Length: 73
Image 1: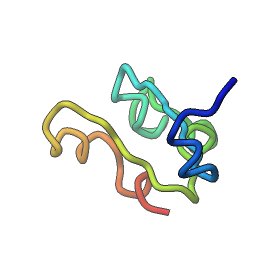
Image 2: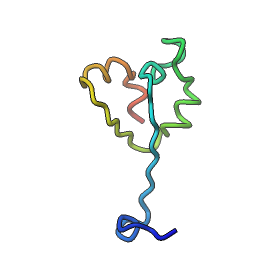
Image 3: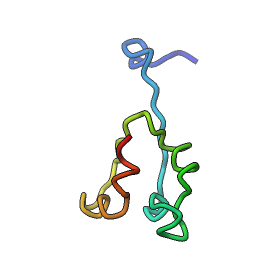
C-alpha cells in the first residue's frame, strides 16, 4: 500500500475514528443503562490523547451528554 500525501508530511500522525451512533453510550454506565464503563470508554477514547468530536448538533447537547471528567485528562 502506497502512503498518501498526508503520510509523507506527517508520518508520525496517528488517527483513530470512532463512530458513535447513540450519544448515551458516552455517559458513564452508572448514569445510563447504555453507558460505557470507564474501562471501555478509556479503551476507545484514551485518557492521554485529545478527543475531537465531529458532532452535527448543538454544542450544549454534547456538553450535557458527556461528563466533563470524561473530556479532560
